Image (tube, rainbow, N blue to C red; front, side, top):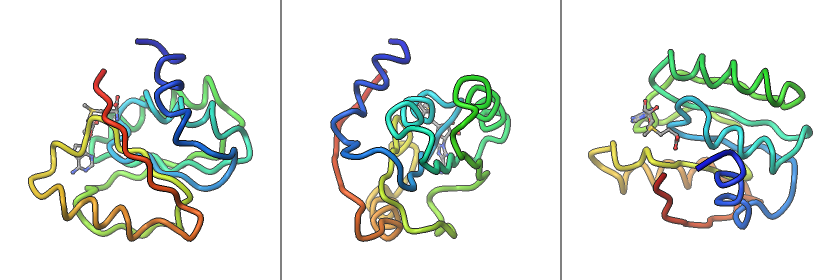
Length: 126
Ligand SMILES: C[S@@+](CC[C@H](N)C(=O)[O-])C[C@H]1O[C@@H](n2cnc3c(N)ncnc32)[C@H](O)[C@@H]1O
């Protein structure tokens, strides 16, 4: 799968460009890059991962390919409550299954969504 495939996987879940989104368990940026493509330069993206080396690779890829996107990188455990702005959308791809208590994480994710935050669930494996 390539960037176009990743972007197409998210496309139906992104109703409008812009806004504030977070990519939980963002890793090296597969879906952070796809989000940047779909949301455009006016968006803010928060990429969250507990693995700092993966986050650094994510940041480097984003700076190279989407330098105009306002992205920030948070080294954190998504099973714990995080300080985040109200989110318009969330991506968590290939990462939720690492959490021992997935229901707790889904509840936390829901608490981050602002009034415009849609919920689209899609099973993705790549
Ligand atoms: C299989 S990778 C998926 C990366 C990316 N989302 C993708 O689909 O290509 C899983 C990522 O989730 C991160 N991760 C797993 N559990 C986490 C947790 N509790 N808090 C933060 N990051 C976590 C890992 O460090 C890893 O980068």
